[in-house]
Image (tube, rainbow, N blue to C red):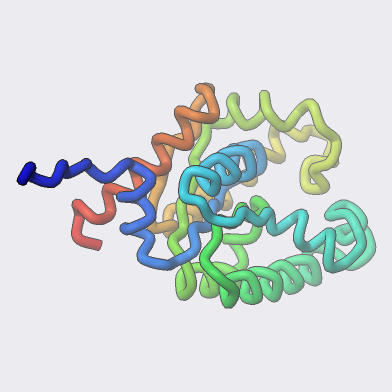
Amino acid sequence: MPEALTVAPSLSDRAREALGGRSLIFVGLMGAGKSAIGRLVAQQLALPFVDTDAEIERVSRMTISELFATYGETEFRALEARVMERLLHQSQRVISTGGGAFINEQTRGHIKAGGLSIWLRADLDLLWDRVRKRDTRPLLKTENPKQTLENLMSQRYPIYEEAELTVESADVRKETMAHNVLAAIAGLSARGR
């Protein structure tokens, strides 16, 4: 009788195992690639993908810019925290957050309690190159948007460092970034987390 052939688990299988049923939450500044990479990673993990900004727009029937203009950032962050809490109490999924979500202490608490956070860290030039072409970023509607982005980096990067994993966002193919994310998650098992 021939011996059973053993097949090494794929990177996706190892990452799924390391997640252990938790949701995966992407955090980082606008332009880091949270939604684009999150979608690819979700496909590779065979999990549903949710973008919190899109979910907030769906439930409020307003755009993010309209919400900021009508209610201000404080009310927007409260809504964002409620949406995150609801998503984390549903089935396992991959979630992309808005740039300020993880900065909010309440939202950060929900994420830490209910999922695995991964920070897509990027340098200023890469972020600026990605976000300057769109005018849909309410926080960048300033006289000097690149300086505003740099200020946001200074304020937010120390908080993003609280994420469980960090992957450097680079100017490479999305598939390469998705592979890097899966490798970082799979590496959790090797580190005994």
